[in-house]
Amino acid sequence: MAALGDAGFLDVVSVWLDGQSTSGLTLLGHSMLFWGRAGKGLQFLAGCAVVLDLLDTAKLRAAIDRAEDRYERAKDRGRAAARVQDLAVVREALYDSFFYAVPSGAPGVRPITGIHENPPDHAPPGVDHARLVAFWTEVAAELPGAHRCRRNHREPCMEQRDHARGRIDDFLGRSLPERERVLIARAERAETWNDLLRVGLVMVALAAVFALIVLGLDTAPESRKVLLSVLAAAALLVAVARPGYLLSAARWRTHRGVLRLLAFGVDRTRPFHLLRWLAFVLFVVGFLLDLLAS
Image 1 (tube, helix red, strand yellow):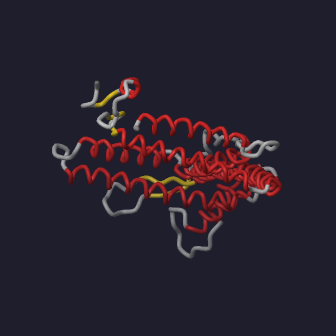
Image 2 (tube, one colour; image 1 turned 60 degrees about the horizontal axis):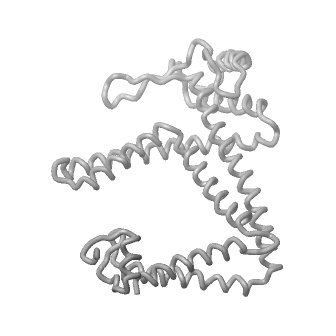
Image 3 (cartoon, one colour; image 1 turned 30 degrees about the horizontal axis):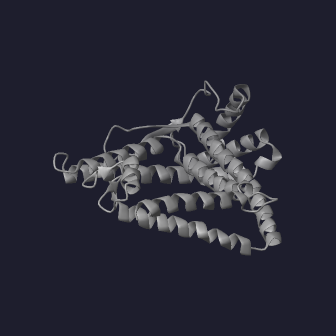
């Protein structure tokens, strides 16, 4: 029938029902020998379900309880990690409300920095604007005397910046519930990691663009051009966004997903009941593939 080329599933079944060999057929781009071996592998995995009967049920249920506890702790840590990233954004926005930096316009010359003369027009999310204006006015009045420099300078020095950071942390601490005040120190580290991640992602994007140029847009394979273009675009998008927040969210969502499967995918009254059903499905699919390949 279709023994010389790629065939559909029903074609393979029809050839097998006619009592002919399916060895010359290909299904989804792979030979029937491949599908036969895949079927044997699935049957082997299904047979491994017998190991579940060798497990101690009491120890198994204790392991499930520990997994559920780990899931709850992971959920709490995930919330805390997200809150740290939010605090890092608010902290950075408050810092920028005091100091500004503009390019000097000359290559190799550092930007010009200074202290804003007016309070911010709007407050970061979760911060009351009236309280922020009062706080800004108070700290701005402190900055001229918040350093021990022996020379006069127009640009803010490191002592003034550190003073503003300390006052910002105090301001955030008074605005947060007591249990969340310990997250402020972690928010400072999160800002540093965000900056490092942005630099790393920009370097990845530049490396991808450079690779595209070296390979040549006309001579490089289409698949490689698409891969490098997607890599460069994704790296730039994440760098412009909040890389620390995205990575933290991905980390804890993955952790939570794995633990949720372990804690809720295993039935308490009949341990590994769902896995036995999965083993049965694997056995049926594997047997069918092995049978068609014979």
